[in-house]
Image (cartoon, rainbow, N blue to C red; front, side):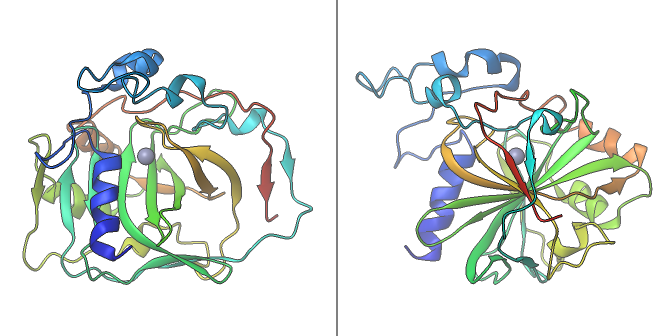
Length: 266
Ligand SMILES: [Zn+2]
């Protein structure tokens, strides 16, 4: 698949906006997440009339409560490197469910897992966090979404706490349109996604937790590998309020582990 197709795929997966060329995904909201599985697509026949069925019957769903998982740090794991550089023409996108930045078509930044490269397609925020620890949320969570040539999806997740103001987060908020499903490509505004990574980690060799999971929004597709960083980033209290001015409570609750364990590098 070429990059253009990948980006179109990502766009279809991660938004409920649809063009005339593809069948329209049914509308959904975080308020009704306990019944996402039951949302029907009246334009489809059985069994395709339940496009979000995986949200209810999936056994490897995300997010999870990290405190309830067994952690295995004895297995040798691949080296993880976030090789993000500056995107000179990012798109600031109000997805209808969150604040998101889509990387440009020519963007070369990628996540390296061992020798495999996963291009960074977009990153977005949830408020509060989706992954929790003993039922406790962080104020927000950042998801970097990568898709490779085979269509495999990798999400790198970073918890967001309240603390120092975050300049790049401010740039993103200031340039994201408030109208749902609208985009802003402002000439001259560049974003380096690496600047949102925790400052006290080496991006070329990240410690992490990993497990098999799913998209946390409909259609809740499984086969998504999650990489969770053990360190947080901060935004100011005022910036969190600004984020909430777009979306609030756009987080899925923790899902059953169903026997999954977390693998850890440390
Ligand atoms: Zn997400």
